[in-house]
Image: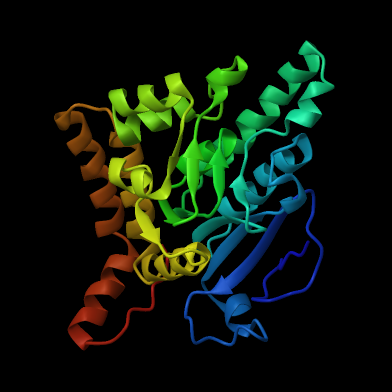
Length: 290
């Protein structure tokens, strides 16, 4: 298992507790071999679930590390977007590590619950746009991690499901609420009550996946999408994400107030001044990010 971590675009290293992290330059033609562009300017962060031998099942160590990585990225102003992917070809993530849980007492399970809530909340709470790159199984907590992202790019091998009710549980990583908001009450109930799995084509049709791509291209296409987003004003994008998240479920009048606050935050920023200046000068903007 490998991880490319730190400020460079392609550093060597070893995955820590089942989570890999590397930073990539926003510009695809930057020097990704030396990593100079990534260390000097805006980057895309690629977070990798890295337990392929266990189909990237989430154990306690992985959950703790995922929360640490997300906290680091949330505080990093150079990170303009995050892609959440997985190692191996069989699975994005099959959910909680049930072998670990089988040895737990009720007290241990309750303690782990707090760790898991922090991990899932850390992905959901990232201020940057987050894109899930899904191939293979995305089941239970794996599906919930994808749902915690802003966009889901799935390849043709992807298979989604929230099977918790089949083993006496309720989705606990945000699945009930995130599926409700993304799919609507009926489709969320269908998936959760039956515990059935759906393929990539159906996932796209019902809105669970946003983009369907050929097999093996989920990560590549997700990174391309992240770069496209990262080329825009980071102030505008972060405030647009905030408006989308906070406005979900509100009545129109309240939602428009959320939007107005986001507009004001962007309109009176240095990014807006640079964006207008670049447009007038017919050049690419150099976003201050403030």
